[in-house]
Image (cartoon, rainbow, N blue to C red):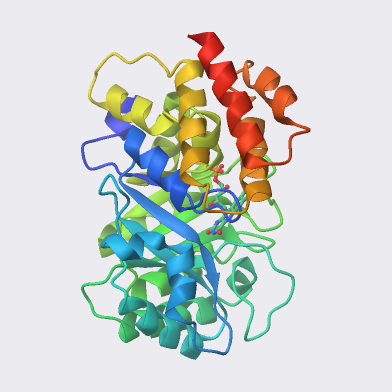
Length: 331
Ligand SMILES: Cc1cc2nc3c(=O)[nH]c(=O)nc-3n(C[C@H](O)[C@H](O)[C@H](O)COP(=O)(O)O)c2cc1C
C-alpha cells in the first residue's frame, strides 16, 4: 500500500507525551511549525489524594488558554495511576479546568503492581485497565474525550485483544498503541503488524486507533499505518530528530512538494524554545538544549558542532548566546 493510500485526509498526527522532554514550550514551537493535530502532556501521577489545580496547570499551562497551544492545537492532559477511584476523582478535578481531553497512560514502565502504580504494569491486569477507563469515562462529561495509550502488553502480547476490548467496552474515545511490550522498552523494531490484530475491534466499535513507535520518516509513517490498520499516527522521538516530520507527512499526503527544514531553521526553532523557557531554572534550560541537540544529531550532522560548543556551558543565557552566534554565522 502506498503512503497516500494509507494516509488520508482524516489521518491525524499526534505529538507524543515525553516526560522530561516535551513540555508546554516545546509543544508551542512544534505546533507553530505545523503538521500536528493534537498533543498530549507528560503524565500527571495520580496517587491516593486530590491533585491541586496548580499541578495540572504546571503540566498543562495551556489550560489557562482553553486547553490549546498558542497555534490552537488541542492538548490532552495525561493521567497515570492504578486506582480507578482516585483516577476518577482526579479526572473530575482536572475536568473543571476544561482540558481538550484526558489521556490515560498504560505504557510507562514501572516495577510493581500496587493500587498507586500505573502505566504498563497494569497491562498484566486487563480488567483493571478496563476499570480505570470506565471509572474516568463515567466521572467526566461525555463531551470530554477520554483516550487510552497502551503498549502491546507487559512481557508478552497475548492479552492485547482482551485489553483493547475492555478499553473499548469501558467507553474510551480513542486508543493509541505503542507497538512494543514493556519488556521491549525502546528496543527496535516496533511491531506495527501486531496492532493489526486489534484494528478490526476498533473499526467495528468506531473507536479511532493510533499507531506509535519508531516512525522516523514519511515512508515509515505510511508503513506503520498500512501494517497496523490504524487511522492516526503519534510521533515522539521522530519529531525531535526531524521537527518538521509531521509537516513533511501532511505535505506528502496532499501531494505538495516539500523540502526538509534546513539546519539553521531548526536551530532558530531551538533558540525560540529556549527563549520561551527563560522563566524556568537556567540550568534546566541548558540541559534541555543539550538533550534536544542529542536527538537532532541523528538527522543533522551540524548539531554536533552546536552540541560541542555548549556542552560545558551551565547557564541558559550562555547557551542562548552561543547558539544565537552559531545561527548568525550561518546567515
Ligand atoms: C524520554 C521519554 C519520556 C516518555 N514519557 C512518556 C509519558 O509521559 N507518557 C507516555 O504515555 N509515554 C511516554 N513516553 C513514550 C512515548 O510517548 C512514545 O510512546 C515512545 O517514545 C515511542 O514513540 P516514538 O518512537 O515515536 O518515540 C516517553 C518516551 C520517552 C523516550
